[in-house]
Image 1 (cartoon, rainbow, N blue to C red):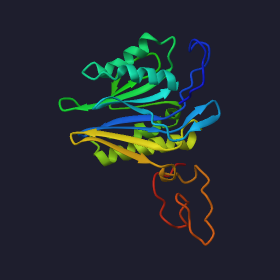
Image 2: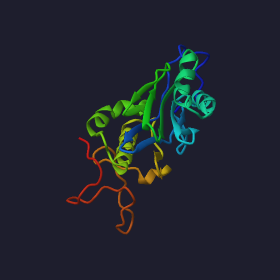
Image 3: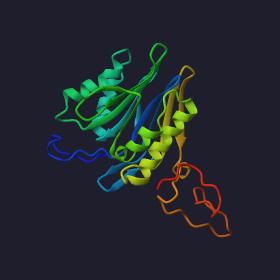
Length: 235
């Protein structure tokens, strides 16, 4: 997510959508997730920003793009009721020459269950089983296509969202920091915060820290040779 000025119109500069936002439905609910990095150009100003905004008690908006623009959209969408889900797309579409907002809206209700809508720049509102956006999303389309499964359990869906974001953070310099997850189902709204040192690492993708003095390995260090690696191995 970028907070730098683009001038009077998004035609004057290339849009910046630095972030990774992900959402998917599962059997009984929906999971949303986002990284925490906010930048001004090449300067990281916040590593723990909350990019998931509530539109109502059971509908949330994942924000990427220009932080002020998506904040305006989320503020105007916080009115509750059945019109909340399309509201973000309508606001985005009506102001497509001035706003740079690439978002994902997701919610849950007892009649429709979990629902996910992609709201890319321009205001399209597309209902999907899963949706991703932001600069980091370009690196994880293959992962999302191959690993998403219908009727996942809540635990499987939360793992899928977290691993997708972690993979994007590995490759995309505009995504990073922490991961926030929100799960909605018939038991309510559940929040999960994943600290930076708890974000999954991927063998071969990042240099791991060397063991600390005394032989103790810091959190996230690579496993010793011959030991079982955890998480997904890429490459």
